Length: 151
Image (cartoon, rainbow, N blue to C red; front, side):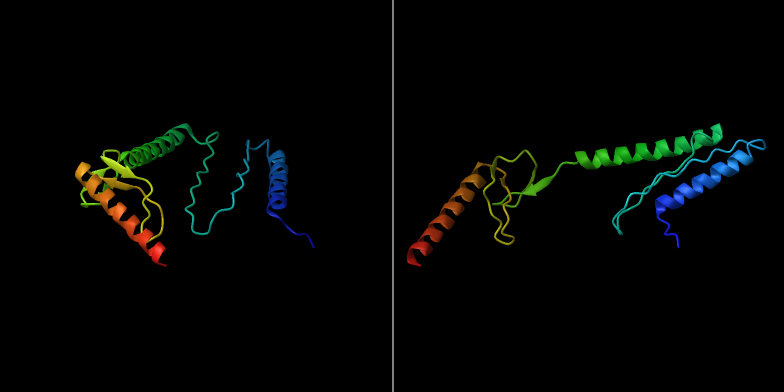
């Protein structure tokens, strides 16, 4: 019993196609192009395969398909570029006012979010909020030190 792997099957199909093409070469020129192997993918990953025989497609039809593909890829490029360049806004840690990324007046990268336990930057909108934030952090540190001394 022969075990047919995808590679063996593709080789057999190409061999048979070459045999048929040689027999029928007087009737019409047939060119068979093997399809490229499909890489393994995640089950839920989107699949995007374009298989067009550009060499043998009629020129007007090839130009029509090329125009459609180009328009779609241009549209995708504009959308992705726009999404990438949209400004990000973050709340001020003291007053909650929304601040555009990069325009904060103060930033503390040592802030640990008590809900998640993860480090995230504390962005502050102005000097008053910065002073309030620092006072709050100093008070938290004092309480933590008092608990460590008492415990």
